[in-house]
Length: 200
Image 1: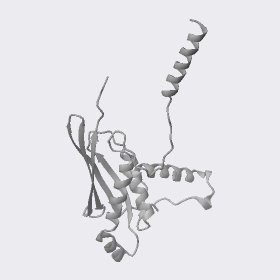
Image 2 (image 1 turned 90 degrees about the horizontal axis):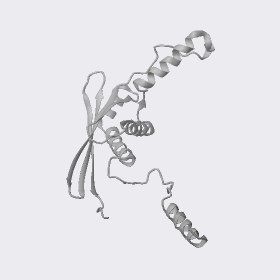
Image 3 (image 1 turned 60 degrees about the vertical axis):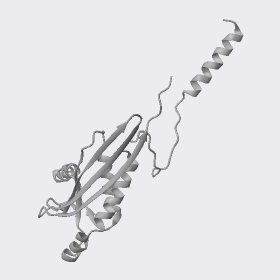
Image 4 (image 1 turned 30 degrees about the vertical axis):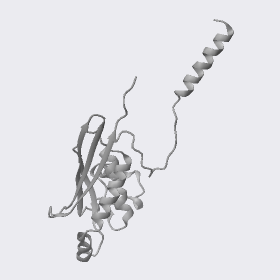
């Protein structure tokens, strides 16, 4: 291969490689981006905001404040993924927790997993390594008054390159003392997905 041909081949190779380079762009956290049409972070944020706003606007909260004279303590329990997609329910739960905390209308207690870690730390304090003035007493944990439970469901209808997916998120607020359902909420998201034509 002569020098001129080598230069041309090298130039084409460089152009081809530059066209295949990964492109990264930072975007706003709240920006709605749908690539596959599946459940995503924006859906989790949107649904959590609307459901928590609905729950905290319910009559149960005013009734509790009137009867108890304090904010209720809440915890988020199991959120079941009943769709066929892999959905990280942990992300959705954290969105729910954030909305509850930021509302200023309730107090929020640690989850069972978080409590185990806290109890381990409290037990360590009792072993003589911690300044007695800073040791936290055992048996002072705040119990939850209510627990959120729920499910994420999906129905998909497809034909050729088009699909319609309906996500339905159901949430319930349960009184932990009586097992009474004090609030039920539902949020639906519907997506139309059109796949590109495959051409060769």
